[in-house]
Length: 290
Ligand SMILES: NC(=O)c1ccc[n+]([C@@H]2O[C@H](COP(=O)([O-])OP(=O)(O)OC[C@H]3O[C@@H](n4cnc5c(N)ncnc54)[C@H](OP(=O)(O)O)[C@@H]3O)[C@@H](O)[C@H]2O)c1
Image 1 (cartoon, protein in one colour):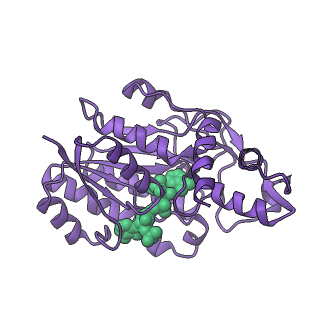
Image 2: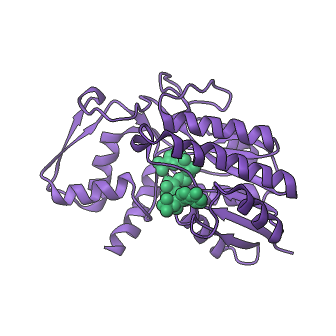
């Protein structure tokens, strides 16, 4: 019999890709896709009622406060969604025997390292967003220690707002663009993350713990922008490399946030696409929509 799956924050980038992956694998789950208008996860009572009423077996939480700069001045809302709401989901999971898979971020690390971050590395977030995501992980493990946390980085998709779509739009509008070249990480196609999540939640065993997932490879935001323009056929915009100190942002971002993916690969036997291969596919989808 199909298991009952709840995907929260289903209107976001990852939520939409979860919807696509579930639709491509019909019959595996009876899935409920909710967003703030149908299930506000900051409402503990509503979350409990939903999980109980629909006999949810597995929750995949794709909802979060993701506006990294805005979070610096909106700490209360950010904490409500990234910490309190995660505790609500964890309590409901514990109360009604559901499993919970939650998404976290590379921003839990300070970015001072020079080798890919492993799950056991000490977090040291430097932003409100990163701190709230780390505290969300801790709340989750307090209420539902049997949960799975997948930390990811630089997520993009054809849905909502993201770096890839912004750089395509700016590349078409402008003659020049300055992009930081001293922050290195790995882009992640939300589609690839959703595919990995599907593999995890359909595995014969539920293997709790923290896992890192991004695409393969490592690049700077500058390199990423150049690749986006090349793949999208944008030739009229001169992209200039600049240092982070010359592009001040409200939130501090890690200089190096490459994630080590050995654990997720060996535990679940998944293969992870190289960032550029996934970018080509996503840009084809984005430009097809324009
Ligand atoms: N984006 C990245 O670069 C990135 C990097 C690393 C990790 N992550 C993590 O990956 C996960 C997915 O990110 P994403 O980019 O897919 O996020 P997203 O596109 O911002 O989607 C988040 C969704 O949550 C919804 N939401 C907001 N408040 C809610 C509430 N109270 N109850 C239920 N839903 C609510 C949002 O609705 P509204 O749009 O109406 O607010 C939105 O549809 C998050 O945990 C994020 O922290 C993201």
